[in-house]
Every structure is written in structure tokens, then in C-alpha cells.
Amino acid sequence: MTGTRQILFVQGGGEGAHDAWDDKLVDSLRRELGDGYEVRYPRMPDEDDPSPARWAPAVHRELADLADGAIVVGHSVGATILVHALAERPPGARLAAIVLIAAPFVGRGGWPGDEFALPGDLGARLPQGARVHVFHGLADETAPPSHADLYARAIPQAQVHRLPGRDHQLNDDLSEVAEAISPDGLPAPGRTRTAT
Image (cartoon, rainbow, N blue to C red):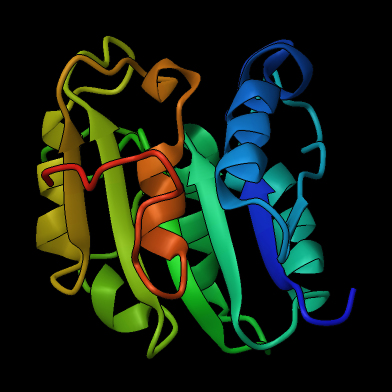
């Protein structure tokens, strides 16, 4: 698709997450961004039992198909696995932005888990030049909002967006995400800039 910016959206985990939950996030993102964006939304293997061992190869295959200027977005455990995969092996394409939505932090201060543990120098391992945004709803009862602070420490260059009253799915509204990744940083028509 000539003239379009590619976005790779990595779903969260759990039975039915692709078709019954995160599809609403993808629909919101497509609607908010409008024309000029190609949002790819692949189904991750064994979505009800996510792990880097199963998902990272699929994520790397998707990353290999991206062009320079692409944006990668991950939700929930998909965001954790996405950032883990990017730190492990950066893509060939130059990324414009990395967006983590309601991402649980696995490691010191966060959730335990050797397989998911993020490196202490996470920010330095991410692709250079890519803007990093961390979005977390303050009413998230799945991944504690304090995990956004752990990401802020691990990725010093990240811009953290704490959204009052928003749940783990950000109430199925990715308007702030669309605003953050649009090239001019302007809100979509009819929207006002939100505090971060």
C-alpha cells in the first residue's frame, strides 16, 4: 500500500482475546487514525497460553515484513512479549514508534517470571530513534498501573501516559494512542489533547 504507514498490533493473551477483546482496540485505532495507515493484526499462536517461546518467533516474522517508518503496538502480555522481542533482536526496518498498552512488567518490582523477565538495560536495547510510549489505565485491575512506572525506569526515553478511569482495555478507546503516533501529534478531528 503506497503512501501508507504500517502499524503492527500485537494482541494480548487469553482465550478469545484476538476476536472478542483486542479486535475492539484495533477497530478504535483504525477509526481514530483514518486513511493513510495499514494496521496489521496477526493472530498469535496459542493465545490462551502466551509465552515468548511461542510468540516471539511469530512477532519476529511480522517485524521482518515492516518497512522503515513502521509503528509497533502491543497490548497487555503481547506488549511485554513485543518489547522483549525487540530488545532481543531489533528488526531490520527503522521503527518510528513503539507503543505499549497496559503492559505488565515482568522482573524486579513487577510480576515474577524467568521466561518473560525484561533486561535491566531495556531502554538501551530497543531500536534507536524509535519513540516509546507507555499507556496505562489507572483503573486497570489486570496489570497494576504501577507497572507503567517500572517501564519508565527501565526505558528512560519512554513517554508515559496515565489515563484516569480507564481499564485494562482502555475502555476500548485508543484515541490517545492515535494522537501520540500521528506524525503531527495532533488530536483526531473533534478531539482535544489529553493530559499525560
